[in-house]
Image 1 (tube, rainbow, N blue to C red):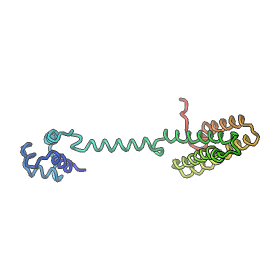
Image 2: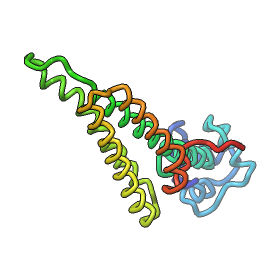
Image 3: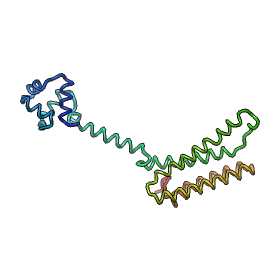
Length: 209
């Protein structure tokens, strides 16, 4: 919105005519018309007087508040955008990794509902969150801007998921649930603290200074 458009809007909101504004500011009506059509710009003294007449701040009158609002909106978008905010992106990646491991650990635990009407429902509760967390992990790969690095990270993450699945299956069929849980935790820690920074160009945790 131009300065002239704002001047006209504020004047009409106050119910004042161009003649009245001209009379109050001791200028011609043609001068007010030119201001509102963006042909000329009011002097600094007249801008201050107009702001007082319209009961608005000088920033609002000249549009600086709109610029500040726009800048604030842009900053807000950047803050809440994983692509622009590396801290948020890293947190989302870590949460997805931990969530997948947690749900995988839940999935290998024995169910004692076989033969009951709710067995299928319990199976869904076990495996759907695991599927959702795995999809979330895969989705986080699209934040990687470098195509070559993204392909590399995809292969590494796929290999990691295979390792996690093997650990889970061994734990499930041998019934070594505790050892499988410990192994899953160890794999997650190695993945976050070693594999990601060394091979995937992801620094998910802050380095010690």
